[in-house]
Amino acid sequence: MSVGGASRGRAGRRPGRPRAAAARGPATRDRIVEAARAAFAEHGFDGATVRTIAARAGVDPALVHHYFGTKQRLFMTAMQFPVDVAQIFPTVEPGPRGEIGERLVRHLVGIWDRPEVLGVIMGIVRSAATDDAAAGMLRSFLIDGPLAVVGGALQVPDGPLRATLAGTQLIGLVLARYVIRVEPLASLSADRLAALVGPSITRYLTGDLGEG
Amino acid sequence: MSVGGASRGRAGRRPGRPRAAAARGPATRDRIVEAARAAFAEHGFDGATVRTIAARAGVDPALVHHYFGTKQRLFMTAMQFPVDVAQIFPTVEPGPRGEIGERLVRHLVGIWDRPEVLGVIMGIVRSAATDDAAAGMLRSFLIDGPLAVVGGALQVPDGPLRATLAGTQLIGLVLARYVIRVEPLASLSADRLAALVGPSITRYLTGDLGEG
Image 1: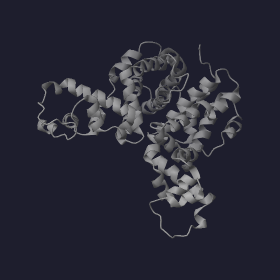
Image 2: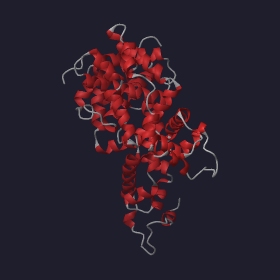
Image 3: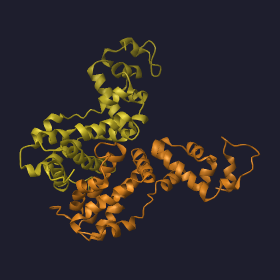
Image 4: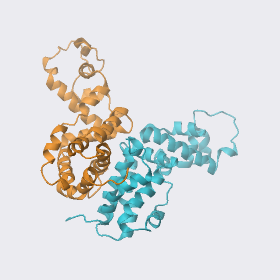
């Protein structure tokens, strides 16, 4: 889309207003992404509109299209986890192999508890029920996410099955703690959750899974 | 609402059409509930309308209001699990206590695999992200559902915490198998899932959970 496209928005356009240089550039792009993250977290993919996201970011809707093309592409950008998955295994590897699940749960809960990550979690969960791209993100968390990386690095047989099983436990924990907010799970510390849920993850990733 | 209210629907009303006796009674009520279950499963609470549910059931929208009052009450009725929770513990109790989780997973997957139950699962999950009543149903599954009944019957300390932990694993399994449909979880037999996931449930319900 041409830069000129940004001036074709209908709502909120003030004719004759000079195009302020401050309304462009990385800071504006970041503000749109932040506004999108908040809107998707509150209303899900279907409920959030480019118009309301633009209003929240204080820009013309055409500028959102200029930077991101479609709402779908904006969603994919806003819902990126601000976490480098490749860093997870080096972080959780040191220590007894029989407690890998405890270390992984403690580390992931520490990440999930960060306010900017919570918005991503809520956005994906609120959208996954009705939007294929969001459902695909949950699927790829189960298939290619941190558990697959850790499972692969542990070099155990049946890695994909193990990672997916561990993923079901973690997705259920995320739902209960952050979305449904069930007590006491919503208030427990990362350490306590690691002690409670970690052994299940350890078993899925490294234990005996019986006959296939 | 008076029975006369049923004739006040605007769309689809044919003036002068006699009120057929066949359009009332338990069979009609059941047809509305079935149509509602399918609509909520496909579109969630927000997306399904009384008008489309009525059309699906072949009745006037006013008749839906006559039987159920609000969309909220229709949702609560349609999303009742067709399962007697009190029967679950007597069914899964016989056998070694150390395999209670395996028996519970096998039994529950057998129930969830039934087509009419799948509609309820999808309806609640698709609605929980945007509707408080549906989120409350998931919460009560975690707090008061089959796990709480089984946990209570096992007479272990920290029953509510144990039931909620087991619930996170089961909700994650339901999401992965039925909603996101991740393989191989979506295709595994109830017996295989029981062997894979059951030991986690057994530990949550009866095992050592460490210091609180």
